[in-house]
Length: 167
Image: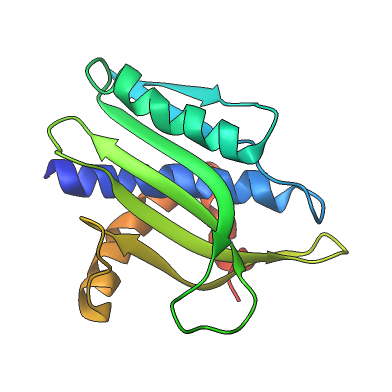
C-alpha cells in the first residue's frame, strides 16, 4: 500500500470525524480546527482554539512543521467557505482536511461541502473533492480516489452515518 493511499484513508477517517463534529453543532457554529496525528498506531487529537477561526486555522497549519518529522500521519480538519471562479451563487460551507503520511512530499486536500439549516439539520452536499499538487484530478480519477477515502471514512466509529448525511 502506497503512502499516498494511506494518506487518503487517514484523511477519510479525519473527514468523517469533522463531519461528525459538524453534524452536532447548531446553525452558525463552527468546528474548532483540529489535527489528528498518529505514530505507531497511537492517535491523538490536537485542537486549535483561538480568538478567530483564521488564527486557529493558521495555528493548525503551523502544526505540520512541528510534527511532520516525528509522526507517521498528520491531518488538519477545519471549516470554511468555498466558491468557484465564475460562480455567482453564494459561497458554500465546506469541511477541508489536509492529510499527509511520512514519505510524502506534500499534503493532499479533501473537501466536502455541507449544509446546516436553522433547525440544526446537517447534510453533506455534492461529491467529496480531492486536490493533489494544487490541482483537482479528472472526475474518473476522483471517482477512483474517493473509494480509497471512503475506506477511511468507514473506519471512523460514526463513518456509517456518512450515507445518512449525504443528499
